[in-house]
Amino acid sequence: KIVELNELTPRILLELINVTTNSGEPVKFQTQVRGNPSPIITWFKDDEKLEANQRIKEHQEEDIYTLIILETIASDSGCYECVAENSHGKVYTRAYLTVI
Image (tube, rainbow, N blue to C red; front, side, top):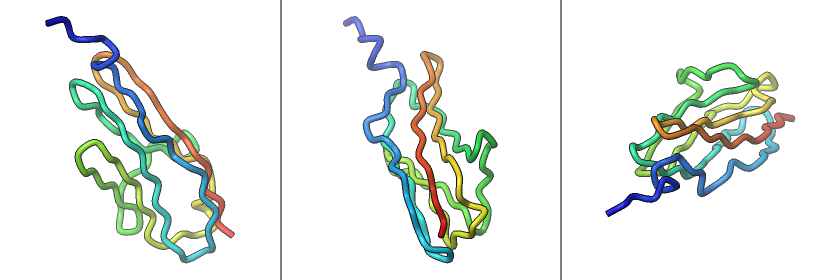
């Protein structure tokens, strides 16, 4: 059986959506990504790799990947990007967060 190449390369089934929130509120960015092998997911903010910490959490459930910011602050505003990469390719989705 020939495996379709487009089943191997990562593909985004759910794009990130722009979010506007009030300072102190939690925010969730969610995307759905498939690929074979399962892609490695990396989150970025303004082109810098995000490191999970007490305020910023990464969560995965099957092919749904979620970035959670527990209590937003003004400096969280910016462009968030989820990059999915495996040996067959790389795709990304991005959205903006505005903290008021």
